[in-house]
Image 1 (tube, rainbow, N blue to C red):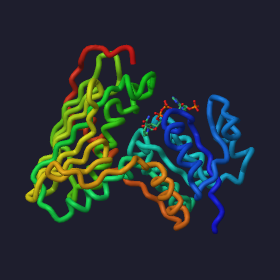
Image 2 (image 1 turned 180 degrees about the horizontal axis):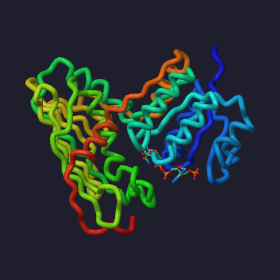
Image 3 (image 1 turned 45 degrees about the vertical axis):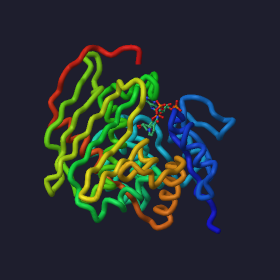
Length: 310
Ligand code: NAP
């Protein structure tokens, strides 16, 4: 049996606590060795204030997961690759496309693995949705990603700063699923982004795409949805309607649930990361981030009332 890969984790925030740390504890592929944090978590693992201090103290660390906000991802990832580590990037993989491309080149040059992770692609019904759509004629796609930012992201002001993506922080998850299950490439035709007057990132977006065969794909992203929360992708085809709901956890065909599974995205992601490392490969698909960049390039901007109590 190969020994577990010694891994450090940078940024002990919500996603690290909710998903990364439990997934790493349950993984036979990795041994969580150290943390980088502004806070002290020595009860969990030796904790260092910076990545450099962690690597100076423990030069045998082989890989790192970067779980910070996207605005600081590039510097950390570049430093880790330069120190010879394999790098797992939380989504989105960077604040710009160019910095992700630079990291990709650096990983290739250093012979290390770079994973631009898209956790929603590992939701339990996504593979079944992709398989069902593969040999059907698609007529229309409707994506609804509507959640209450105050419930899911309280106090996370980085989301509202430039590079934080605003409503595209969850919306990019929908785009990561759509780019993985729809059989043809698609591109943005028009968009309207709503920016609160006091913030640098949008709170809502209406997007219209077309695929290369002319099929329309519409998406509504809303960060102020109270009541029922919606993470749905509906696809009309020549042989019935597919509904992928709950962020990829449940698949129904013509109203009948056909696939439903317990959420296990991060164990799947870490298994994938381990396999990439063992095969000397990287996985850096920027398609979801490119669609977001296109929305910022191509979309109309509407300024709405200020948003407070976030
Ligand atoms: P968060 O709760 O705000 O945690 C981010 C952590 O990053 C902070 O606790 C801090 O860790 C560290 N950090 C380093 N530089 C920072 C800076 N300039 N500003 C703020 N924090 C900084 O955020 P999160 O929800 O975990 O999200 C982190 C990333 O994971 C984002 O890219 C997000 O899109 C992605 N993600 C989040 C979720 C979710 O449900 N929340 C789901 C999937 C993916 P220390 O205090 O330890 O230094």
